Image 1 (cartoon, protein in one colour):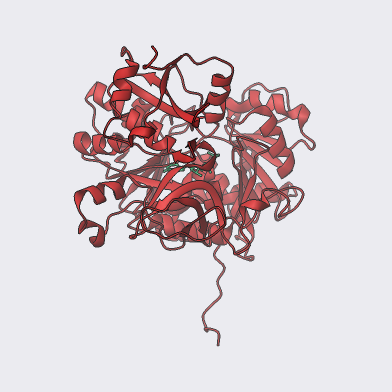
Image 2 (image 1 turned 135 degrees about the vertical axis):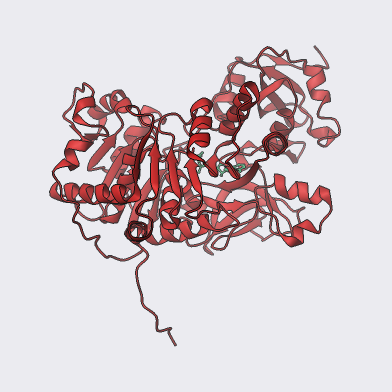
Length: 552
Ligand code: ADP
């Protein structure tokens, strides 16, 4: 027997209509290239999103067409999120930090009809255009007064929407319709497209807003420091509209702690999300200047492992909770987040610390499991370690490709309906998941594995270390042994023997790296993570000076 309730589709436009009715006067503040404090309201944003929908319709786009964006976090990008998806088109966010070959591949694979770009990406796009199969129409996210010189035909965004009416009825369609497209950076091979749906996005927005997740409401002020061009800024722009949370966008200043601190203080930011390097940069700035971030309640860290020492530093020095979250493009990205529970509070201090340092537990909507090499499900006892798999209504079921679903990366999807994340993890009896490593970054020493993440987190707890990365070095006896690559703190000198001695008692003795290489900069991927692939290449090419204290 079926229930007898209305079958209202879960659409991104339903979030827009709700925010328009309930939270019209709530503010959206953006730092843009032309204006360090652009401010308007949700009412203004959705009025302009409807004008944009009318403008796109006038240009003959059809449902399902891909509309590319190459832009920082600001109000115009927010309008694109809603105007494009709400009208049944697919908002294809493009990461401008990708290599040119990857950009060419994804724009061709997606066949974008339009490309909306920030003025600062004109040069990037100029280089791409000759290599595109079908040139998209180009709209630059500025007004006529600030149009940059271009070698291609383009209009300004403001001119594009200027003469349109904001009278637009958001269309109704199946909630499983595609809403947005984002390619993973693809360290090897071509990037893979993740095609979100309206249903997955609305459900994910509920998940993100929950008290034990980002805790969003009209009383809060959120600033996503995760880019809108990668995994929809962790879904925050949709979730803030759903809950009426005031939004603060740092525009192109996501890596500038002075601007971030100023925005936090002046706009009263209570919740923010970023990768660990953002939080490392911000705390270094606060320590150096004596400035504060007293309005903040929660900072969420994810995208790569947040060192426990950093969580403690924020709590002790600034009274701020830096909370660990885990996810990936394929998971929208919310996969897990740390929050305590009465059951955890009853456990000994050591267990509580371990849980807090872990990547947290899945919220409703996500299930996690770990499996062994044969696909056998392992126990959630905090000890067993295996391949991490995930399923739920906001987890990808296949990759998007111009050649059709199932033609790319099909082996990541199991026959019984789970997605294999490529991460290796353990799960505690209370459900706290601990990422040991990416499967491809684990160091295999004498048939046993060593977690590079654990070693990196330990190394950054040392006062002379600013950044650390651990990669495998070939070893005759053990096949692989860990090499610790470090960037020293300003003015500090690294003493390799002393640094390795620091690991004593913090990790198993045989995990302690055999050697240290000091470098000026650790290479990063397009999503700002340590590029172990590039580090391995540097090692193979003899570009790292390796010191082994035993022989030094
Ligand atoms: P990419 O960076 O490869 O483009 P994603 O942004 O989807 O792709 O990254 C997902 C990966 O980032 C995860 O599979 C995991 O390895 C890593 N990751 C994300 N959050 C965390 C975390 N909190 N701790 C450790 N690793 C993390």
